[in-house]
Every structure is written in structure tokens, then in C-alpha cells.
Amino acid sequence: MSFAADLREKACTLWHIQRVKYLVREYSQPGPNALITVTEVECLDPQCPGPATQITILGLDLIRRSLLIHRPVAQVTAEDLGVAGNLKSRCG
Image (cartoon, rainbow, N blue to C red; front, side):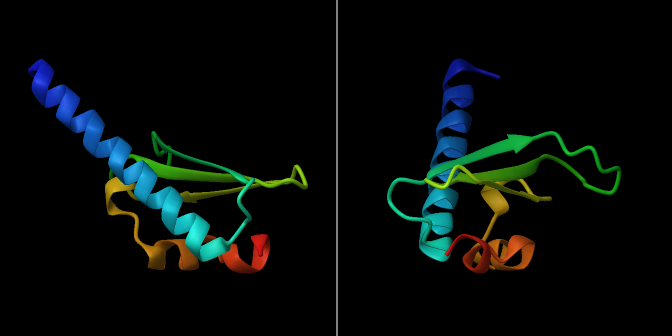
């Protein structure tokens, strides 16, 4: 893989991470000071075809809420957030 292609892939992944963070903020409304992290992790489930997306929300109450979506970050949608953990009721 060339340097340019590697850089393009990293930029695309970063864009999708920011997109998912925005979706989490819009859907769960954790407040402006909540820390939201989105990372792609290796899925340990043998039925999972590839990487999974781990989302963590740390609010001012210092309670950490995490969920794992068995899709790469580029494939995560708003519907996945509602189905995966019902973030609105847990963080709102």
C-alpha cells in the first residue's frame, strides 16, 4: 500500500469516527461536557466477520457507558445506535 493510499484510508476512518460521535451526541444528548470515544476493535466473536465499533460515553457523573456494535465504524448508522444500546434512555 502506498503512503497516499494509507493516508487516505486513515482520513476516511477518522471522518467516520467523527460522524459516529456526532450521531451519538444527537441521539443520546449526553451534554456538551461528556467525553465520547469511538474506536474500531478486533471482534472476538467468531460469528463477527470483521472489526467491531466500540463506543464509550463518560459523563460528568463519571459513569462510563459502553456499547459494542459488530460492524466497522464506516458501516455504523443511527439505527445501530438505537438498537445496540438504547443510548437515549441510559444517558438522557
